[in-house]
Image (cartoon, rainbow, N blue to C red; front, side, top):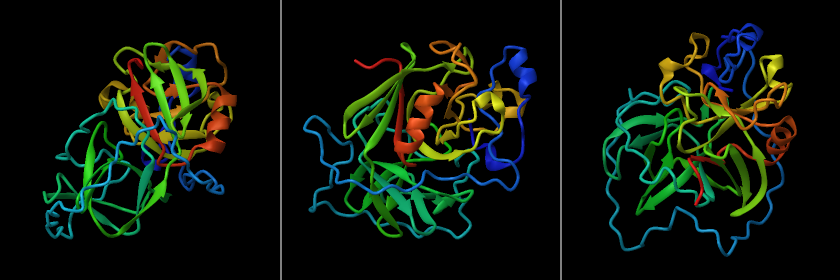
Amino acid sequence: MLFDRFATRRPPGWLIAALAVPLLLVTALLVGRALTVTPARPSAPVAAAPSATTAAPSPSPYESVPPAAPPPDDLPVVTYDPAPRGFPPDPDPADTRPLSEGLRPNRNVAAYDAPGGRPLAFLAPTINGVRLTVPIVERRSGWTAVLLPSANRTIAWLPSGGWTTVALRDQIVVERRTHRLTWQRDGRAMRTWPVSLGMSGQLTPLGRTFVLGRTPPPEAVYGGVDIFALGAIPDDPDAVPTGLRGAHIGLHSWHNDDTLGRNVTNGCIRLTRSAQRLLLTEVEPGTAFVVVDRLP
């Protein structure tokens, strides 16, 4: 499912289902319905697993800090729409090492294309009312790289100041060839489930993204279970049905499990209702979500 700009745009619904065109990315929120975030739960001490290696090492204290150019006041703000162009690609989009720290803007923070580079957009504290948490993927002296929302396999560099960090314990890994989703905590596999994925021409996008937030299901076909909207968008936005244009890739359940293990969706990841309910209670916004062809 998807936040689809959080505007009221319902997909064709049961008519599409009857025609065997599975709904997958939905018009996100109805007018007046805001995304809800996962209820906060007491944070447990995070003990790094011996085998878990994070992908965001601390910089050397002896490195010089490239200065941040003052951002123009009229920079665009990253929203649910596709992010502005010009940001660099994720240097390792298939990296499945746990990302154990997230970044939360406390004000509009300028995002740059490189340390000391060009400011291209602002990251705001919220996207359509949802508290934004983005995973940290790299650090250099005075600069921090994060996965960019509303974009695929893209990062942004932020200078120090204007944001705080939070611990991230979980990660979700999806393997396209085996149609398998694995929920990991502290670098250890907790549960694995079969999933349905995108059909030919609308394949589930590869690479690292993250859980952006959650929204109630707008149609009965989603089995009455809330949906996780991800930071990723379809690789080919024009390939999805007209009613789903502008939607994000989502993780959601379905009214039955008949198509698990098949490529039948418009790019989203579909799993059982019981699995989705469990993930909704355990997984926080900002959690890394990685789609690979197959794990080694």
